[in-house]
Length: 313
Image 1 (cartoon, rainbow, N blue to C red):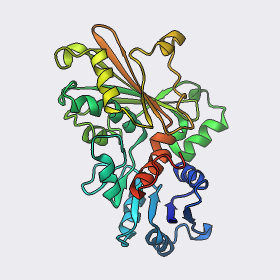
Image 2: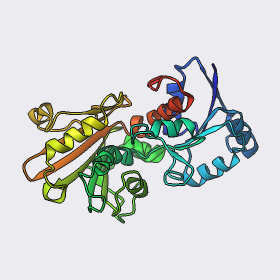
Image 3: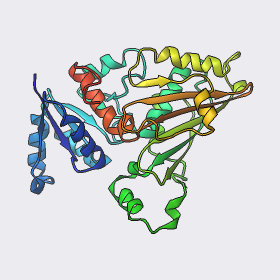
Image 4: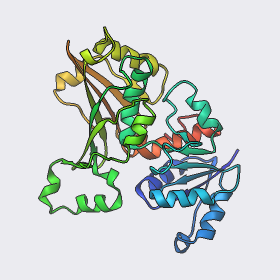
């Protein structure tokens, strides 16, 4: 069966990569808008409603407008923006989230694609909160370091132009403590306190790692690094795109450093638990353009359409 797909915002970083993934799919017919009509609302609406699946790779306000244009009840909208990630009636496009999540994605006609930082944070924390190992009311701090492609075209051009010494070292941002991923980080983990979240962008194109530090004394009695690693392993057993690494991963410790870019050009997320007797560091790495954006969107499309989840990935 042929499925018709339209990408609204096809010239952005996420849209371009979705097109690359779909180009290898003979059963996908990609609907394209003429360059001179990209801002023509009537033509966009026509293509959105002609599609079986419409990806929105747009800023938040434009994504809301585009979603409102879809009146065809058969069209499934997958929104890559922040606009709908905590909105009632929208499915959350993370199939590995919890039992039954794939069924929700399959049934949904409105799917919000997770944010890149949020994907890593939620994959780490949701199973542990669900299991009662991490109290839902715990005040959690998280740090993320990511490649500059997550900043979009303007930031990519800035880094690739060179000549600015400030870009040679990592740059912490969102220092107002109001990063746009925080609401979904709470909603989709079950945490009831806002995490303190510090993201940083660095001078490499793609790759992302989120870390969360915990004290064992704050966790359920008897919980240590081994308990947390086993809980993650059990939750993600059989998952094709989430890999839980051994406790205090010997290969990483031997090298002395974590390779943030090791998941690049894949749709995989690697989860780590590093621990001693008193403390734990949870860490997730992924490709911010793969499992953190375009790959996740295509994975959700595959789940929704009922085809092999790994197609094109």
